[in-house]
Length: 302
Image 1 (cartoon, rainbow, N blue to C red):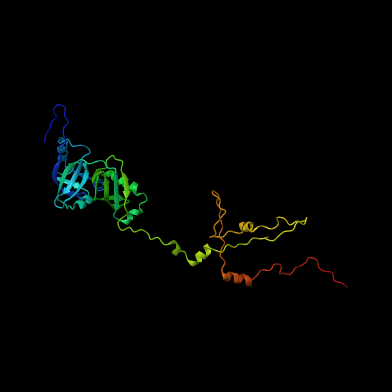
Image 2: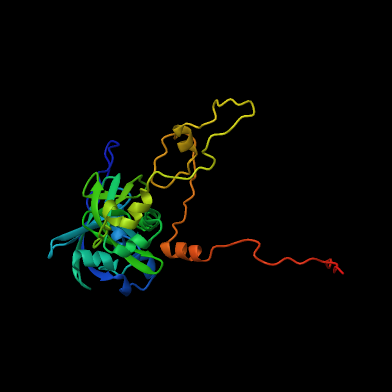
């Protein structure tokens, strides 16, 4: 296991290859939350001594394999404080590897390319309730060292656990995310359904159609001809085009005189029902119906 350099040649790194008994973070006597909320494991101190002698390339990345179920993933190392012969790994990682407490896990050192792209699939529609999911994911991935395709990682946000499946990573099936510039995309969550789009024509009722497309009529006062003092009758009658310009515009009638950069706000005329018209016809208002009084009393004639 010892190696030396001759004539200034650099030492070639040798792979770290061994087996450990794996246990979940709940068995770890130290800070459990720091391990559970990330993608790093706790290894024994003897592993650090071996890795130092093997001239391992930093950052230290490992491939974890359950040889019995033919499942594998990748991770980093957080500390070397575990008991000899044991490693403590996050529960979500044990579930991906189909491992139980005390099962053997094969650990091998690995060199991974730096990530440039990743795509995640939320496993619950509740993930859409997060206001800024990319910021939440970026903050959570600070505790991860690498990503592997088909892994289901767990994010702890606002005292809730959100699971995301790694659908795609580039430039390989497993990448390192330490000090990298990575583009992130999200796929639709599992169980998400696109809202049905209603047909615009079917959603409009008959009353709305009548209101939107009324007859092009309107009232314009003083349409008659005028009289001049000199008796001339020139330019006294308005043309039909001029009258139509002064007619009140209604909803549904296009404005053919629209000018670019000029906005008009037409007010909607409330629609009066027939019952209101009948009441107005019955109770027509007449002014000056009372009797007058005078302060001066009429003189009586003798």
